[in-house]
Every structure is written in structure tokens, then in C-alpha cells.
Amino acid sequence: MTLTIQNTALDLSETSVRDANAALQGAASGDFRLLNPGGKHALACGLQTPMTVSIEGHAGYYCAGMNKTAEVTVTGNAGTGVAENIMSGVVRVKGDASQSVAATGHGGLVVIEGNASARCGISMKGVDIVVGGNVGHMSAFMAQAGNLVVLGDAGEDLGDSIYEARLFVRGKVARLGTDCVKKDMRPEYLAFLANILAKAGMDAKPEEFTRYGSARTLYHFKIDNAGAY
Amino acid sequence: MCGIVGLFLKSPELEPQLGALMTPMLAEMTDRGPDSAGFAIYRSGPAKPTLSCLGPDGFDWSTAVEALKSQTGATVALRTVKDHGLIETTGDLRTARRFLIETFPDITVLGAGDAIEVYKGIGDPAQVAIDFDLAGKTGTHGIAHTRMATESAVTISGSHPFSTGMDTCLVHNGSLSNHNLLRAMLEAKGETLQTENDSEVAAAFLAWRMREGDTLTAALELALKKLDGFFTFTIGTRDGFAVLRDPIACKPAVMAETDDWVAMSSEFRAIAQLPGVDNARIWEPEPGKVYSWGRTAQRAAA
Image (cartoon, chains in turn blue, cyan):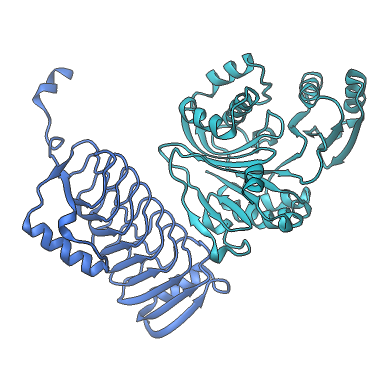
């Protein structure tokens, strides 16, 4: 049985994470608030219905993991792996996020209003990620599809071993990773940026960004290396 | 996996509560390290040169006290807490430490200095805190560790903090790969190590550099070049407190600062209950960057 609950506050100083997640996962829709998160792990995970969840404070690891259709907002910071393997919906962090934002994310939108640390978008498979501040080293490592938009700077080895996925950085890139190269900014990308920046609620001009992507030199075996075998 | 916490008080009014504030921080990190735990406290007030020692069950601490007295001619006093002996002496601490280690192979000198006290135990970190009355400790700063043993046995000697230099100690989340080579080098430089543990080598490396005149920050910057491996370190000195992550930054760390305190932990949840945390500046320390606070600098700035 699924429930529709409106404006429900779940206080994590009284309710266990397991019970709070069960209540959210059992609801068909609704608007929820999670109070006193206190850095607890795995908050608002596995949501599969179109609800809104406001986590009022700081979240621990793997917050809003595997999200589908729900809109989850963290008013503070988020720990490692926020929105990991997101399928759809929106996950927004108003503060900073730790490493591995939206790791392996397949779809949906993840917005980090502050900074994201290392490995943001690692192995992303279709998710759109917008970061208002900087991203740390090895961001978009082995990225396969989707878009990473960074309004600040990117750390070392951006897009290392990237397959596809589009990376847009407004600030400096400390160092590009292996097989990640600067690419031309074309009108369709400017239009895409204008649209996603508006969706993310970010104030930035599309033409200020530089596009990076795969040089595609790691796709195929180099015959020059045949002698190594 | 291991858990680290550290708390450096900027406000003297909080000093009576140091241990009470650290106890829930340590307990919150139990999930990250349920095998053993340890903590170091830096007392406030005048210097009270003390060696914090660990002995086997039933160890007759009076033999160590008498031997130290006759060897050094200094005044020696003893108090015991469970399997720990805290030996106060007016003699040179570095000499006393080496004498105890060489003369009594059964005891481990966990730390020595004018302000530091170190305690360690196996099992539930919350119980270790109770056994050694962490909640009742007062002081200026402290660091603590919960250990999940990965590369060596669950023994008290494998527990953190590690300390080889006076009033200097270190807790470590991670592992070092070049510790055997460094241990030989440090022993040749005059550091006395007591375990095969990689983290003790990191502590000894910093102790050696600071004995040579480096500041804590300079010693940590050299450590970044010389230590090969994964680490989040938190380090205490008599007047200072520092945090360093290796450049790969696989091991987590969160920091928070208010006008009254600076805290670090492996995870935010250990900091979440500190007073005034809602208005704290909270951030993730950047890879390969030294973060340090000093009491002298703090006083100078005030």
C-alpha cells in the first residue's frame, strides 16, 4: 500500500534513518522534511516517486542515492557520494559536497551550489551535474555520458580516461586528464548551457564556459603497440 | 577504515569540558573502528613532565619507578589507571623514555611530555573512553582514534595515537608503503620506535623534523614529499594542532571552526553535537594542504 502524505516532518533525532527512509519509500507523493540529519548516512535513498524532500542540515554519505523522479534538497553540506547512481529527478545541495558527487549517475539533475571535492561525476552515465563553485581532482573520471557544468575551477586530471560526456568549465582547469581535450563551443552547446543554468538557478553566461571532451584516442587498440605482445 | 577526531579549544572557558566534548565525538566514530581506540589529551596549566606508559596485566610499576630513580637521580612519582602507569619525573623526559623502553621490554611508552597524556585500549571505543575517564579530562586540545585493523593485529600497541617525540602525537587513517625504509632512517637519526606499525613511523618522522628545528607546518610539508601512501593525519603538539591529507585524498576528513574551537573528524556526524556547530564554518580540507592552529599564534592574534 502506498500513502500520500503532505508536509510531513520526520525528526531524525527521534526516528531512525531506516524508518524515515521506509516512510519516504512507501509514499506515492508528498512534501517531506527531514529534521536534524546530523551528518547521518544514506538519507532519502532509493526514492521512486515524485515527491519533494528537504533535508534540513548536513547529510552524511550516499544521500539521495539511486534517486528516481523525487526532488531532494540538502540545505547544508553533503558527504561522499551524494546522488550516487541517480536515475532521474533533481538532487540539490545548497552547501558543499564531498567526493564522488553523482557517481555512475544515469540521468536527472544534480546541483551543488557550493564546491564539490574530488571525483565529481566519476563514471557518470547520463546525469547532468551543475556545480556553482569548484570541483576537485579526477572529476568526470571515466565519464561515459551526460554533462558536467562547473562555474568555478576544476582540479587536476579533469576528465581522465573519458569515453564521452561533455564537460563545461567557466574557470581554470588545473590539468586535463589523459585523453581529455579542449573542444570548440558550438551554438547548440551555448543553448544547452543557457537552459541547464536556468534549470539549476545559476547566474552565469554560457559564452564564459570552455568545453572539454574525449579525444577518443583510447577507444581503439593502437597497432603500433602490437609488438608488445 | 579508521575514525579520527580532534578538538582544539580557542576559548579557555571550554577547557574544563575538553574531555566531555570529545567523548561523544569518539563514540560516534565507533562504526569506523570498533577494534580499539586511543586518545591524547593536552593539559592546560603549568608543565608536569609525564610519561604515559602501558604495561602487561599485573606489572609491578614500582620496579620501573625505582629503576628510573636510581638511573637518573630525579624525583619520580607514579599513578596507575588500569593497565596504564603515568610516571611523573623531574628528569630529562627523552632520556627517561629511552631508559624505560630499553630496560623494560614489556612496557610501552605511549607518550611523553610536559602536557600530553595518552591512553589506549582494545574493544569498544565508548568503553575505552569510560575506562580512562575521557569525559573527566580537562585541557586545551586532544585527538582520538578508533581503529579497524587492516594490516596488523588488534593489539593495544597497534592503536593510535602514536608518539615518539615530546608532546607530539599523531593519529592516522590510511596506510603507508615506505615505512620500513623510513623506520631504519629514523632510528639512525636517534628516534626510538616501539612497534612495526606504519603510523608510528609518521609520528617519528614529524618528531625528528621538529627536534631538528622545523615548525609543525614545515615538518608536514616535508612529510608530503617523503611519506608514500594514503593518509589523513591529525597531529597534536604542546601548543599546536594540524591536519594533513595526502594528495590523492581517498581518506575522508571534515573540519569545522567557530570562535571557540576548531574540530576535525573523519565524518561530520562526530562534529554534529559540538556547541555552536550550527554557526560553524565547515569545510573539507583540500588534498596536500597543511592546516594548522597554534596556541601562541592564537594568543598573539588576540
